[in-house]
Image (cartoon, rainbow, N blue to C red; front, side):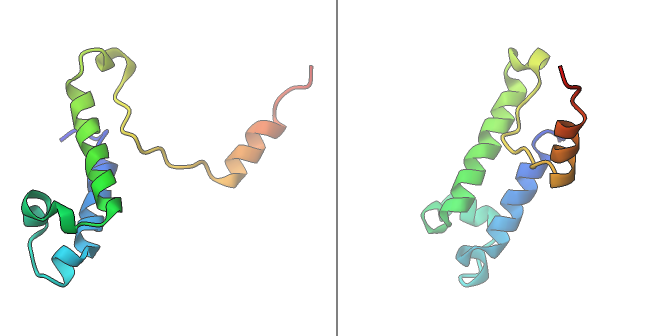
Length: 91
């Protein structure tokens, strides 16, 4: 498995495990993805679409040089943002 989509797949797993389809109805997460998509929360549906686009991007020849954009970019910590702005040399 490629590491570019790993974070999205982990998010999808967590979302499925918290969904009513798994918790209350007792279905397997794979069953919920295949047969009960209408019962999943909107968050899980959007993460599933992002995983699909990420996996499709791994097969796209145009992205072989540019790199696959997984769709999820963690935000920078506040200390990193302020230090990059303050280290800029005045012109």
